[in-house]
Image (cartoon, rainbow, N blue to C red; front, side, top):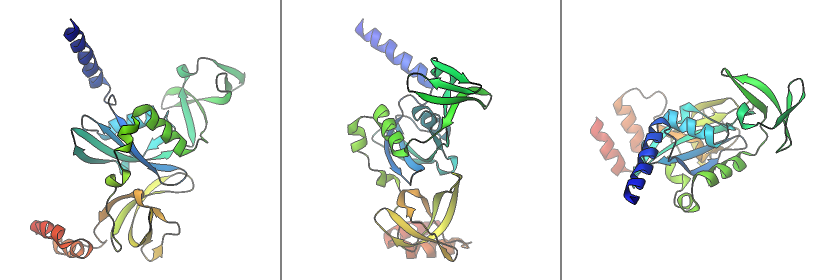
Length: 254
């Protein structure tokens, strides 16, 4: 009898998972990249595609964080678990579905009071759906601490280091890294590492050194020097940038 009950629970879980791929996802590591962005690592028992990690981040962060598609990376598969990372940035506007605030009281033409939290929201249409919206002023680290607390145990987070999901970078390497301007518009850039600090890099883009340090976890990947057009050029660059044992394997590409 108990076995049949257990089987029904498992069948129900797997049926739900077919419909909602975010079931079983956990935030296992994260690192702030400044006041408005952060790198987030998610684990699950099955591969995590871009659509899944986006849906998961939107759900657990209450749409306070926006995943940047261009920074999505499928990471290692280890110990029966799959990992993926993505850089998120703080949404300037916080959204809540209308049905999640049943006690909201209209206090003016387009202003509503959330009686439980004492917050004032406006009503707006987003992608064809009605939401309550307000300016998002919450600290990004507070958002991520809450997300981690609700999705993973202390043991899980303590056993994962964000460093293991970030490329190893050496002085002189060319790297592709995430950027976020003053208007919270995300982007990417390629530059050469001129100096490495504990948690940041000094990067030169073209002939200009980036004025602010680049967070080490904003690096998406190490790339070949711009202008390299042949496999010989790439291998020559790798030979200078990495130990010989690595380059010897890469040389097999030639």
